[in-house]
Image (cartoon, rainbow, N blue to C red; front, side, top):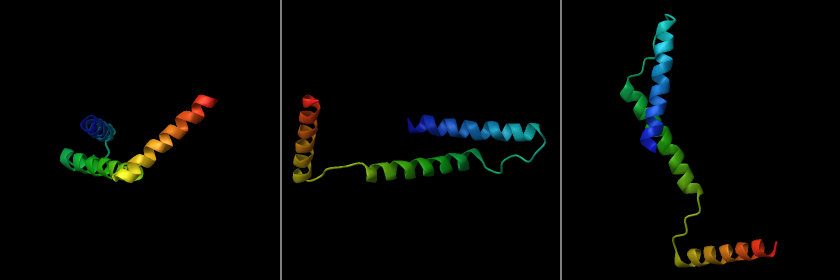
Length: 80
């Protein structure tokens, strides 16, 4: 999935570059490798923030608390 998104972003930048060349403007001063590295860095940052934000229960106590919370939510949904 990450590779597909990266390829799509590279394609978009290259298409923009071609449009600029067609209209006689200076092309974007980035190589394909620099674009790939930039997009990869952005994807890395987004995934890092998502992973940090998501509840990752590591300890046994936290996993048990998650099970209790899920059971509580299931009970509430059943009574509606």
